Image 1 (cartoon, rainbow, N blue to C red):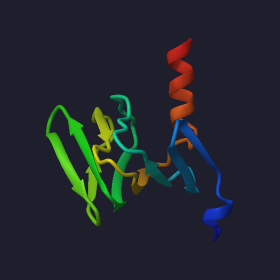
Image 2 (tube, rainbow, N blue to C red; image 1 turned 135 degrees about the vertical axis):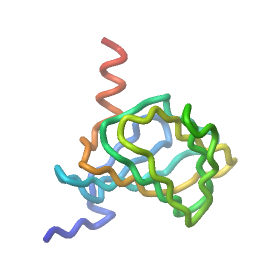
Image 3 (cartoon, rainbow, N blue to C red; image 1 turned 180 degrees about the horizontal axis):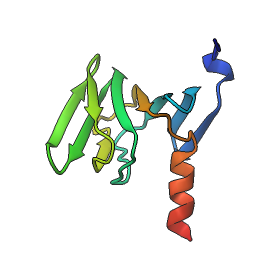
Length: 120
């Protein structure tokens, strides 16, 4: 067993005020706590990992080609199958907070690596 204390966990900001904290980073599962700033949208992306996004505070809009725009309210989880292209957006004027769970686990530096790939 491993204990991960939030205050001691690895963290980074893929973009200004978009904060991610690694609560579990294993090969079979990873869990990331996130702070999504007001009016922030992730780039359109996909990953082979299945994802469960759970909103702890605020609201998130997930857009896919198959489902269109889905509003995920506080206390609600959304399942995104691996390989499904999507955008994750906070349309509120306040920060939204949630958990991303990936199975199998993905690299915690996913967004830093995506940014580096885009600039090469």
